Structure formats: structure tokens, C-alpha cells
Length: 114
Image (spheres, rainbow, N blue to C red):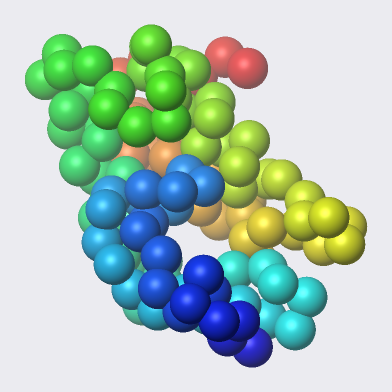
């Protein structure tokens, strides 16, 4: 269900969902972000951009993070979060979390330890 302007269009830099690509936000009946192939592909592109920035030594630019571990911790925490109704913020959150770890590993970055 799409809920008003807030639910219709969002910047994916919110809630740890990737780079600033504007897309329709598709929520399920509980308000959780649907796990669709398109949603995941857009999100992956944002993670890949962030991993490339980390690898290049640039500082994180989103979520008020001072360090990359703080950045990834905030994104993972957001993915694993719960809505006020108790449902998850994101369907299949662990799929997204696993991709963060995989992308960082492929880039030769150290594992996250939180």
C-alpha cells in the first residue's frame, strides 16, 4: 500500500537504503519496505557507491556518521529496525545486511565487528 506523498516518493539515502536515487516506495500492508528485485538492485547500487568511497578513503556522507563502521552500523540497524506497529522496517532485511558484508569483503575491506 502506498501512503500519501511520504510513502510515494523517498530518497533512498534515508533508513540506510542506499544512494540518493528517487523511486516509488512500495510498502506492504504493515508498512514494511517490500523486497523486490528492482528495490534491491537500486539499493545495491547505493551500497556499491558507498563501498567504493570507503575503499578510496573518502569519509561517509550520510546518516551523520564520523567513521565507516558507524555508517554501516547505522544502515544495518535501520534495516533490522522495527516499525511502531512491531513489523520490520524492511522485508528480508538479512538479505540486505548480507550484501553489505559481501560488498565490503569483495572490496578487500576489513570485516565489521558489531
